[in-house]
Image 1 (cartoon, rainbow, N blue to C red):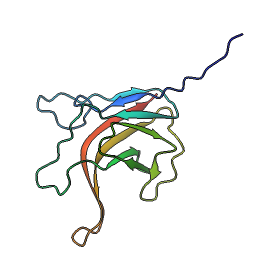
Image 2 (cartoon, one colour; image 1 turned 90 degrees about the horizontal axis):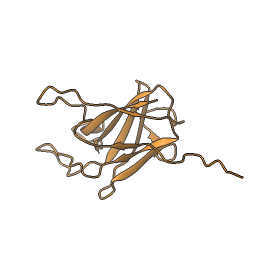
Image 3 (cartoon, rainbow, N blue to C red; image 1 turned 180 degrees about the vertical axis):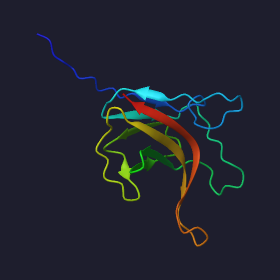
Image 4 (cartoon, rainbow, N blue to C red; image 1 turned 120 degrees about the horizontal axis):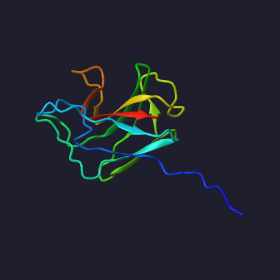
Length: 140
């Protein structure tokens, strides 16, 4: 008798320089991640150092955002000392009127951004998101 064990392991997206969607000095194009459709995926920030621009009033990232098209924006907290995050229905919350997160869809291209979200202030009436790293993830 054999039993069928589902593949519960989530794909891993490792934050690195090669996938950072920024203008690279040598004009190289940033790589994109391609992962299989699952209930979610994990993000590893282990070994990556986020560079905080001069003059910022923060010392580290505090948010991970997922952007899917023009209509969907989701987020989860980035915590100091934690290097592995699970992006799934249990952890992603909708932002700015997005519908609740229902799961990833095959064929989706999303933007994964890690940065700092500053609350509104008297000088800036809208929250300000400072991107410290961003990558593109293709869901197969």
